[in-house]
Image (cartoon, rainbow, N blue to C red; front, side, top):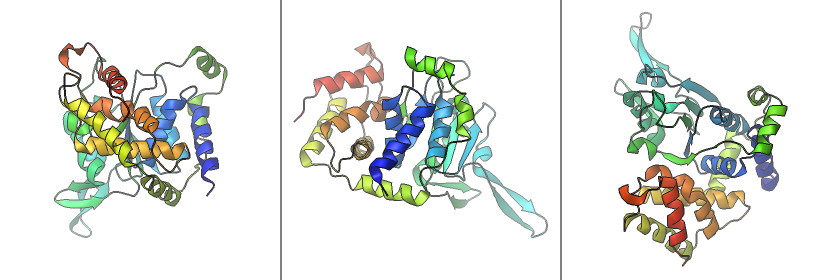
Length: 306
């Protein structure tokens, strides 16, 4: 496996669909290589669903797309047990959760009850129905899109649900040159059907193993702990980061270092992934006057390198 060529091919293919968003695309790639779930949040029409579908196709994984709505039920995701007269027993019929990539489109339009149905699947890679546990395919990713909470018909994702997403990415509007390329080129959604899978599930597993093997020096871990401690002290946030969040940051930083062709994590890797991995987990202090993302960026400027 020619790793530099493979990584370059993945980047190039995704950038041909989502134009002018290299940093966000790298974050999405790093998220999946780290084995995490991905939340893409932004206003409608900027390419959230297109990016999610492009990721699934590029990584060569089977996927299901579910449009989350207010009347969606948990059983619509996990499946149901139906009584079969021929065998005189209940037979479980799998729902769309039983795939390698679940595209949860507009996840915050579903009710809290349906949102919570994903918790077990995202954390344990299994679902429980009628007292029986069913394992999900390997690998299993949730790539969810979310509209801003100030739009009508949305329900806030609970903190426990947000914590299951390794990273949150916002695309934002394209710059003028990128938008002109979109206006003058082929329809991006039409391109999706022609995207080849560049990886197999086994190759993805090998890449994930390589990511886990990336070295994090003690000094780097000291810097990570300084950042985590800073979120727990002073008046930055209502509550600080948990140990699980700290481990998530490290996983993402290892994946970012791997994308850059290094076998060790540099401080810049931590700084690059931190906003994507922790801003959705934190609530800024009431009197800060900043969003969570702005507060994280301010914290990065305040905490010095060891």
